[in-house]
Image (cartoon, rainbow, N blue to C red; front, side, top):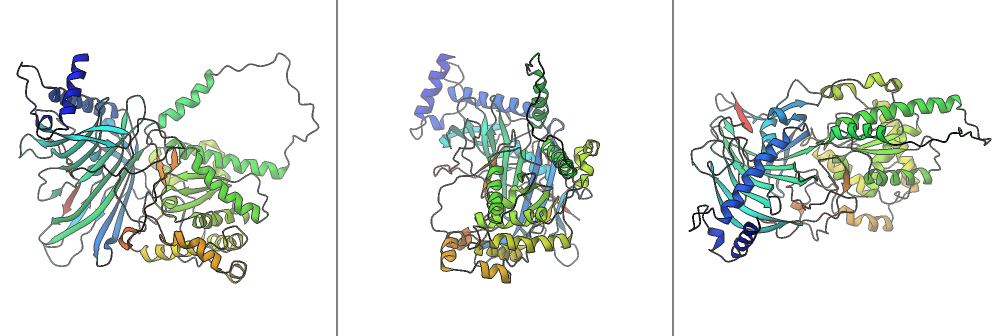
Length: 590
């Protein structure tokens, strides 16, 4: 083993010299032994096979969001429609997924490529299974028999040093084989990124280009977490062209671990005194009828939150919740509110823009937090949900009975529904203006108004992104001012100055605020470098952008700083379905 390491290290050093080790063939050395590069490829192939086998035990949640694009003379491209799918995969059964969204009659993402006429009119159907397959390089034969491997260079992806290989099918006519580039971390030889497409689509089906990333989850595991796909000139039909961007996110790999950790509490040793402890204080320990009602509502809240967290829809308690609760506390203190039980905040894991309250628990989606431009805009959304509590809009206490929590996971969105009536929404929005007028954010609401205006402008282009599955739609007609609020919070020069930095972005692209650990669903704030001057086409409100990850072999911690390395360039390669039984990413419907 020592001799192998020494030889392999020598090969890597020689790779820095153009035309030497980087161009070394995968044959045998002059002594008849496999070359060091050949041995490295063997380890990569063996590790990828073990990785695929390891994934069979998991059933993660898979979210696919697609934005159809149109040419724009000023921005280059702009959204012209979108598709959304949320499901639970069963990787032990290949690419099988159970839809979780309420629209179960349409398990596939459908996009009609409009048009009038006869046979020239056809539809394009996006297939969620095809996007899920992008977490695999090849499900049927990723080895030297079916692929050629050419070493390119070394490269760091964040803190992880990688070996970069260009991969092509051994046979040019082998349909469904991957062609592109792979990044292999140089300790365990796990593939942590691959970029390319599956080859040789048919006339009726297509394979899209994609960039697939895996994150370290501990115990020598790298789990698929993010996939980005993009096509700018996909030709189909007689004279049709499709442009789109897509993001795929996976999480909830360790959902069973929540149950296991709770069961482990039974193993804790509890030491009790021989003499029972008796409270000798004169404090009143009985509950009044009002307190009993509050505790009953709290029990309903806790049952709902626990069920949603167990499913993987709600993120575990973490630092982001504390940030949201700090903003809520600012609203409470400045408005002299004494709310009992105390307010809590949680993060919904999905990208759809929605918010709702479960009693005294405010829930904001990850996607909504991502696109909000500043703290004042966040305070505006939280004020709307806090207003429901102030106005006494209660949670349905039927969920205080635990048997109401017992149903299959795929029925969750049918059972849950926290949207308020239009009358409740109207009164809460009005109350939110009053809360904001007395808050520390009263002179900083210009960004919130701009956010709502941009959302209203884009609402017809991203209908699925702004369509809630559990809660309330973000209002697109909120003015952010009333007579009283305007008098209490004039648009002073100070307010304009404070909001000027955030005014650069009326709304951020998706992924602008949060990151998550696909293993345990922990959500943390993203800390990126300043971006400097921004061109108009770079603002991209509510849009999809590529994933460029800062990889590390450490688990994500709340203090981790995520940055985008400047030297993470690589050839764009393609990814497609495995040979033998390829899965199409899209197909045409007659």
